[in-house]
Length: 541
Length: 98
Image (cartoon, rainbow over all chains, first blue to last red; front, side, top):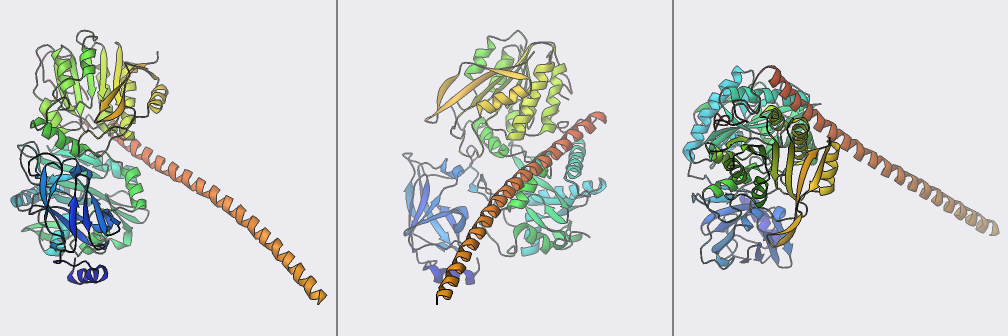
């Protein structure tokens, strides 16, 4: 925030930096500042000890009240708060209140927002996720990422696509003459040669397969957003390169996943050259126009609380044209990494087979074929394999699948594959299992449907249909789900929903399937009563 | 004076009729507007569904292309260890899922 703006805010509200005009209170749910109203446009920095943890814009987060401003903790952070911490809030770089010691619960430890297992410092990022804080820690990585980006630009040129820098990788150099501190990824885009969303998607899919053929590992977020991954030795990503598909449709420019402007307001071609950390990169013809389209007219002013608020007309088009594949994957991956590091223990730690898997084991024909959908860390899949069955286990979590690789069973077998069931391109090939083996087939999916989006549910049920209706040997699907509201499975989880059992039954019927209830029973989860339903699904003969 | 009163009463009567007429037209316009809003909502929904199906068609077309050209498809490169982890398995074999 500029000094002028700050001065204006101070005059209007009586809030002044350096005056410690407020008193701070906090618990596990929220932080309260007692004192004069704080202007909506002000940006606050919340510090735990001397570390800035979270930057926020008052108008977007604060609930004002008489003489107080209440700030609810982001859910991901609220779920972690424990012990005690020394808190303060800064306004324009100076304390708004005296630092106070806050107690969150009975734990005697000082709270530190650190990655469990590794101790890496973490922050609340612009997506509201708890993420590693790279400030000053991994500065060298951006040079490695830029080197890989140079290679990728060349590779793409050889495949007929002109990549250029965009997003944060364009913003830092254009605004500040350098990469932004803490930036550890590279944003790249190409302008599609097509103007029909279906053709634009197909072009991206073809590019994805070509990248795979050249040995690149990718994750697809949507039909217009591909991420090229560079994993590190510890199972996390060292860095990644984003490839966004930009395109024009009916006179409008679309800069996936946020920008939408009249096409004459964003001139991309001919590309120009921009030097970033000593390397030459292609850049849009008018970088300022691109940055205004992405970050708004205020892009020249650094905004630590920046987050994308995509207007509804743009959001709607991106959602329906390009879809959304990757909702909660990163959070699940972080959760699985924590479990694998042994941070958590107990029945939810992913190491023990479920009661239902154990029950079913006794009922299965010898050497059955089992497909487990959404296997997580694979305790059930391992259990089935150890009991002499041949198991294919799929999940979209890379650490979960990696942890299952190389696991061998004396009696059965286990294949682990990374499959995103929200993507029909990844799900449909599993139908090939119908031709594999000459044994009974069991499809097993525990608490999967609660975490899939509508497309994922449709893909999964269609896969079940093909496998059950076309398998020559007996085949059945065992689906377990929560049919009423339930607690999030871990603090950082952002998406989960109760399954509408009637709607599911109706969907099954339309597919020529029917489901029988299996031992329905209420279970207590997180202090809330939640109905866990089990269905055995078979094809109508 | 009587004429003036009569005129005023007649005018007021006319005004009341006009108000009633305007009210009727407003009610009619309101109903038409509500109907149009419903239609726009339905068309919006249809448009979104059409766009979603276009994306679905593109995804399926990509699967067909990959299949016909013998390319490994989107899952092709993910894990050299994925196939054939364990010997002797009915589901094993490179490309078992392709």
